[in-house]
Image (cartoon, rainbow, N blue to C red; front, top):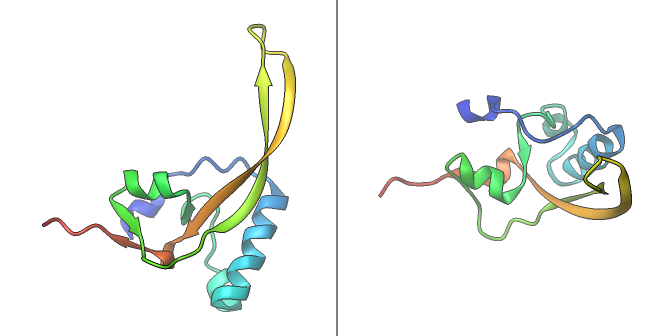
Length: 99
């Protein structure tokens, strides 16, 4: 999968990395989890789609939580709230056919 070298929006959260790593281990085993790279091979539905991939039928997302910050015009954080992020690991997707 050559497109997996395109960086994701992952910002380095150890909590997110560990949550997703554990879910991959449970679903696909420890060996598969060793291949997990949050910067390249675990993406949102929309990100995979933009790279020409589609989530395989019946696949369930991996879930993580991120903190969203709303800022005012001066860049001051005025509100923070949690948001669930749905991710898909590369074995859950396939290249769109070019029919």
